[in-house]
Image (cartoon, rainbow, N blue to C red; front, side):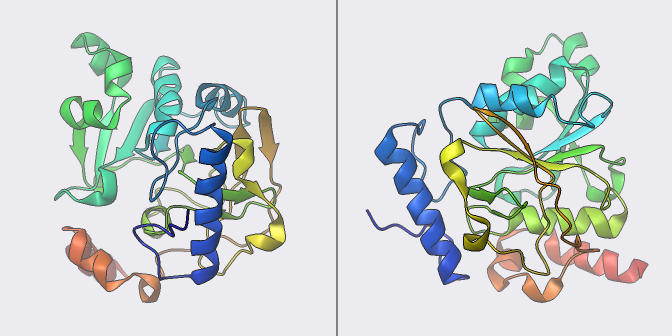
Length: 254
């Protein structure tokens, strides 16, 4: 089946790669639910989260940022049970505010099950809305991925949300090049380094956790210092309600 995804057209090589990965997951039966145009959920996502929790930096992290997608529900759940504050974005950044804060102590006091709060629907109900400027420093960052390489290369579903968020975080000093950046994927989502070369505006992964174990990429790729506004697409400014105002605030700071 040929389906390059909802956000196809920005990079033809990555479009083809994403389509191949989505098809591979379906053909092998390791997908959980639909995968095309999504960060794909997969059998073994809970094991990948377990392996990720053994990455250097996880145990001491106080604040963990995690993407909102289903395969990372086990990551958010493990972080809450480990007593960590979780920052999670509004899916596709479509609300007037960008992020939600989940405080495990607050959730427990209110009797909110962590299993519910770890879902994107649950955290939108029970979490605290948060602007970028109100966020504390992130100690460990998790992004969703469609394809990754052992050298730290990554592509998501093609919308550019993760690169945009990470650039904003770096520009505001919420994370820097020393902050661990990680993902959880099925081992079938691993591709050769040459298939997924790093570009100047890409943020490289430090850790990739699969159902089989943890990979340290030992990347030497220079991390971007902030947002490359030239790479932000017109539809992102159109569809993300707060983005234009945030850009104005950030440029006023510089």
